[in-house]
Amino acid sequence: MHRILIPATAIIGAIIIVISDIISQLPGFTGTLPLNSVTAIIGIPFVFMIILKSKI
Image 1 (tube, rainbow, N blue to C red):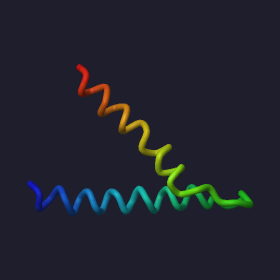
Image 2 (image 1 turned 180 degrees about the horizontal axis):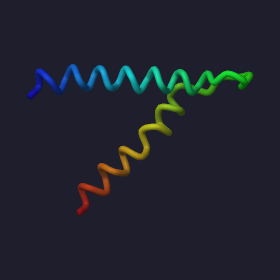
Image 3 (image 1 turned 135 degrees about the horizontal axis):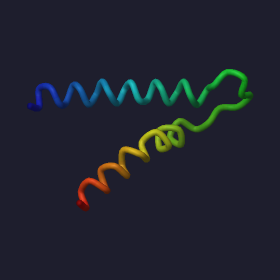
């Protein structure tokens, strides 16, 4: 189980960070957004989903 879970978590985390970095440096926008704010915006729906599933 952990032989698959740990590498998969690392790969998915890296993909999310790369996507967040691309979004934070969108072309046509003169400045850059902080990477942690973009990552939080992407992660909020997952946190809410986990919270709602645990209460049912």
